[in-house]
Image (cartoon, rainbow, N blue to C red; front, side, top):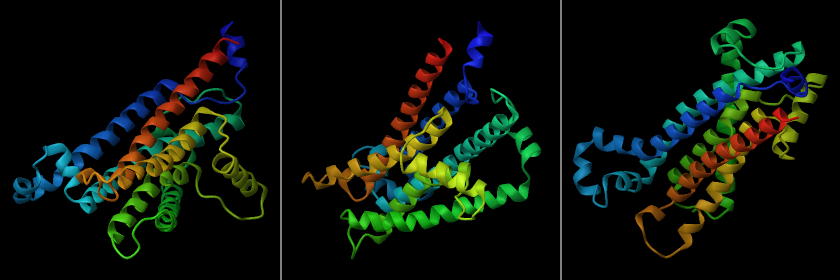
Length: 275
């Protein structure tokens, strides 16, 4: 019976239909931001359009000025990741409440949850912690980018903007949803640190929400690394300019991993429904 199938689920679940629809909106807007936001430069400065938009308006706007392109990527990514991170944080907190209360599903509006289990000060503190984690991670990513062969004596703006963009994609939503681990000696902090270790050191997510956090982060980093490979090809194409291909690869990896997490979670959901 349906009651029996519900009892087989040992973990509280997020509303999967809402998760799927929001993931679709999120990834679509990421593509839109990557393609169309760089064109805003030519709307703000029309005099640049005639001299730089020669191969085609969409691709030329992305390749004409890598610094401006990465800046637009960071702006668009920050807005979208803040929105997406808010939903991830909402679901994570709801699952914690549902698990402790013995509920099986999450079905409440985000506004109701924030009024019931949080306040403005708490949200502001978690947001500031996530921003600090993002800034610190951007410096670490810059160091890693240099180790992987990025120019040291030149292209600082390009390399650091790529690092900021990676931190926005990878770190901010996770840090905002889970909040950064504490090194306090209490049990709750220890459990929290172990959760971070399991998710991002062992890469072992167990639930749909954990997959939604882990897979896109790993996919963005893998996509950025794979995106750097075409730069070594001696084709001298505008789109091979550093660091456009790693940034676009990070976006592609993030989107594909988001949908991969969704498909895997849907498979688990269907398998659980048949038990």
